[in-house]
Image (cartoon, rainbow, N blue to C red):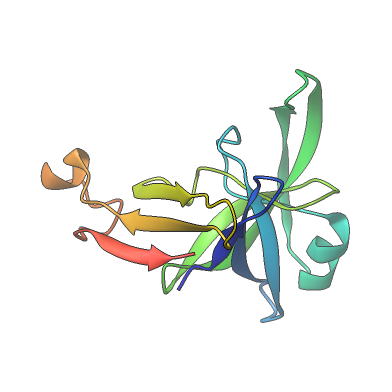
Length: 146
């Protein structure tokens, strides 16, 4: 199950289990960033702890339009109950969860004034799946609380 909250600062935090090639794991709390088209960023200390192999580096454009060269690593995440191999970017600071793993899900954010807020990720059968493209696993709607 994917878990998370919408904070009083209006940030959506999602927990993701990240695993390295040697079996080391770390539960990461990441900010859901809908402006980040990739999968995940992790700080250098977490990348080192997990012993993630560096594959390449990519240019990334930050929110302030600064272009930076960022190392790319391979990792495994537990997402929607299944292991998923991903490429993540090593960027120091708070981890960011991009739209990569959220693709093919419906994201619902529920903000409340006085109670804890929540977000919901729902798996949706996309038009591309109905046409035979099984990238999202061929599932129907599935509600996952976060």
